[in-house]
Amino acid sequence: MNAIMPGVFVTDLIRKLLEGTARGQDWNAILEINLEGTLHACQVFGRHMIDRRYGRIINIASIGSFRALNHAAAYCASKAGVQH
Image (tube, rainbow, N blue to C red):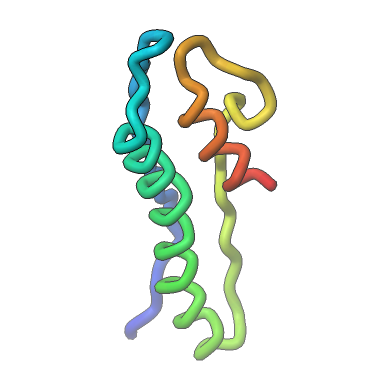
């Protein structure tokens, strides 16, 4: 049987960047892992669900998607993207 069993996939990168030290590459790395990683996982598993005509995807973000966390603007923005 080639079924995909339920599982929890967590793509999470936390980088506490000190104020004023954030670089574009840090921001991009966090968005790539948290947003694009979620997208790619949904695409892969979604294909199997379409073939089976059944399935559920549950993405769990973070409290950071609702409330700002200290020194974690990119993390919070990426999690808000997953949430909304």
